Image (cartoon, rainbow, N blue to C red; front, top):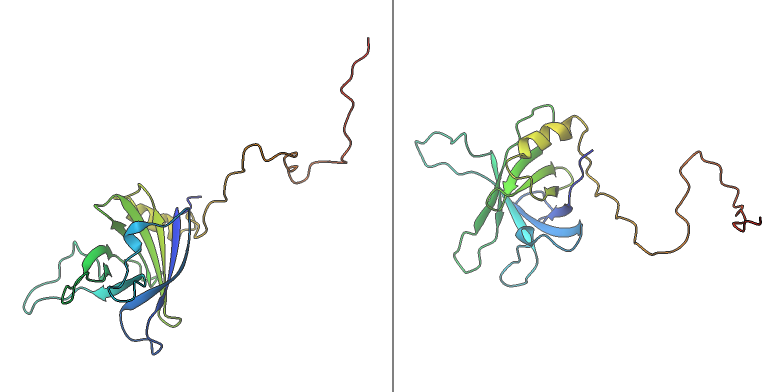
Length: 180
């Protein structure tokens, strides 16, 4: 089962369920993932925006772009911000679940939006850019977990390793002295 490297959780900024700004509530993972740490200019609070692509009058939609965009706030006044990723939500059986690529298509993301709760969850998979659609198909069939992999055991921590489930362990230590 594939597990993400980072899990980011966002909450919609406005209580009435309107607006496209999502404030960072928390994340799991080793350190932080810089492309999703997008601070506002004034408060420095990390946020992302989820918008629909805007079409110019009289133009057809570009099928290479997803239906939504994940964007960072602008750095200066009047700056419209920058696009982090397109979000594709192709499956009607799994509404509000999507996928995309971050950075210069180096890392893959899976997204889950909950419009009623006003939340957005972003799962980040490092080094799996251009494989986001395959991850999405695996995710919808149960092959991808939304939980991080457990941390590896610390070397030299001392003590005996835990016994596998179902094994007998009666805490008896055998003498290792051999007399001949």
